[in-house]
Image 1: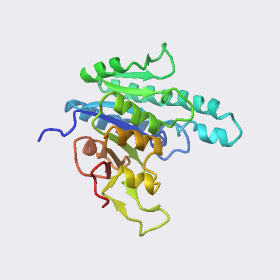
Image 2: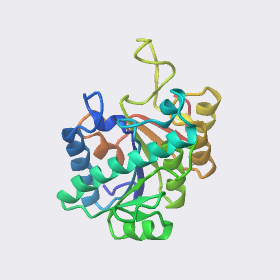
Image 3: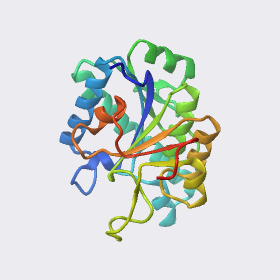
Length: 242
């Protein structure tokens, strides 16, 4: 069966790269993630990635401790580039051509973000990793993922997390929590479900880009998601709340 997607955007949290560590990057986790991505690239799916930096630095936490919020956010943006370069190195060691593009100029280590160039890389079956967020403070990497997905005409945003979908309450606190199979953008916004921040959800809604939330920690889930298996929770325009 043909793959259902031609071009996708994968959102990876920085925390996902920590594995069981308290801080930093677990090489075994990076190896597992990039191995699955490499398999999907071989099937002809064009992949762009946005990665966070929660494993290194979170701007909002820096702000909470007294740091200027804009300064804290810029530090977080720079930290995302460290994660992006780590993913790039691992992918290229597997023979997958990869480009890092940053919203903050770092010409010695990465390309500047140029939309048309990013699309051209994808057309040549190169993985493109977007670092430094959107280049603006006060915006999350979730919002960056939605923005870049719209800019490159991605068909879907995959949000890889530490849970197996979206629940009506915290499954760690409530063993009776219900996992949704599908949700509408409106339901997510109305009930403040923590899928992505509201700006990201609104961007996806306005551009009719579905979001799939799935558990990154299950081996093989990246490939399952990107090749169309029904896992996790799908958020979209016409999805029933179920």
